[in-house]
Length: 485
Ligand SMILES: *Cc1c(COP(=O)(O)O)cnc(C)c1O
Image (cartoon, rainbow, N blue to C red):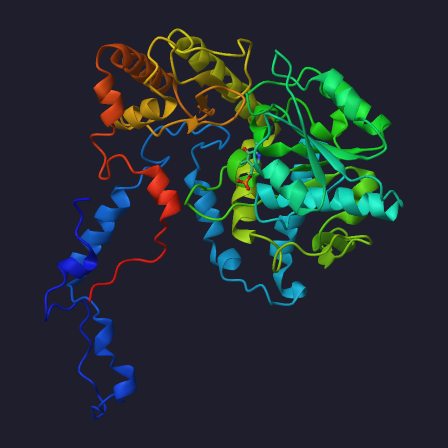
């Protein structure tokens, strides 16, 4: 790395802040406050500004370039979201204020609950979970409590397709369930025969991502849900891929019992090192009383001139609280703004363009890369980042080489069921020129892999940090910054 640390830049006597002449007599500070051993760096204001501005430019971001990180929906985050979140009336409220003094905030949260209910077809939504994975944990705990209250303690098994995100088995197992993987069939759908053999009196539920992580719409979704329901189980929908469905189908109408939303994916709030997420959970009517608290509700209807009075309530069989206060309110504001700006037609347009962009890119990329499930995709697709006749080139080499072409790499090695997976999600916010440039970079890399594989093995050549030793990074963690003697 070429950037010097702030300690290396330090020069004795340089000063960033100058205080005005004191208008009271000077006093010596007690020794306890003057710790010389911490060795603070000495720099001018300009040194500091340049240092941090240069550091910030080392990061790749969606504002800087194309970011096709599959499963993460790295769409552009409109700046109006940020402007609204910074309005003093919203940004300067305190979570301990009495609810009568923050009725505007509660109105916003209540409306967002209603937006999400309308978009998804669920009966009620709790905004409190902090991220998608926490939403899944909520779902698993609701499934557990539902069977407990219905005195069904034999139901200890959750089914999870082998294409699922790793958080699905993790949260089910954290909730005390036995996780049973389900194979996918040759079209990338849940294998119905395998599902039938697991539908017994120990079945608590199934977690399904649709479209799944192969970017494919599960063509048997209605039958999957029917089989699980007939066996007495509940169906959890991992809603991370909702971007492909907005305004077209509603998971609640299809029969899902529970689903989380990833506000930071579908509804455009910064993520991936850019800030906290938010994973609200929606449920069908029979599970409304199990949701985590607090939920915003109208306690007194308004009439012509007076607005309704909002407050929080705790559902009767609530699994409890998942998060301090009300969840990530700053993210709620951004998602609310995004949905309000788009409206019904705009939301559908997002899904249609996301699917169109992915299919356009897929048609180009499959000329050079093997597409294991060759059918119309939804908002993303997965290719193999390897060729049988070039055994020493791997998906990781392709991704590293893409950085030299100025692109953020796709998701690597997920889903696990595709050999050397490269998972590509362009999102709706990219134009055709960008998709063409990315496809042509992948085409050049496929050619380099044959003719000059050393370019792939050595890549990246142009980034501030070259190839990391990923094994060492995981085995030999350094979690604090370096401070000199
Ligand atoms: C992102 C994602 C999750 C987890 O969501 P987080 O908000 O990152 O916790 C779960 N499932 C799928 C399919 C995802 O893409």
